[in-house]
Length: 165
Image (cartoon, rainbow, N blue to C red):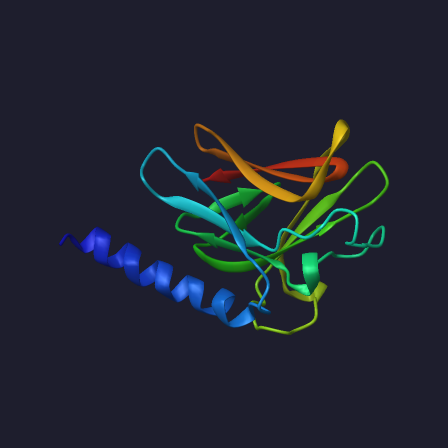
């Protein structure tokens, strides 16, 4: 077995531990961005009902009460910030017509959002789509060194690019 495979297995195990501990018994979904060099970026989230989930404009949102979790095997840039290899929580911040996103280094289960622990924050492209989704959908679109995060809930679609360094 090559050292790269062993390293990847150890890293993924370490990165998944906080997320597994944070699960509140609900269903979790994962979306993955596979980079050209074989490294990956993952986001784990709770696919909540678009009709039942409520969020406040300008406030960090944790779908189903559990923040999304980002795992990255590669250093990323988001806006002007650099995100090192590791595990992070991700908070979309809804606002009328213009969402943003915060990547936070606190992955402790049950902890409250603390803006002081943000490692990156960026504006998202936000648009209204014609047909509403019934539940939260999160996906990556991969182009070259970019992993474009796409978040859909109800008739809102928001997008932001993470770029591998």
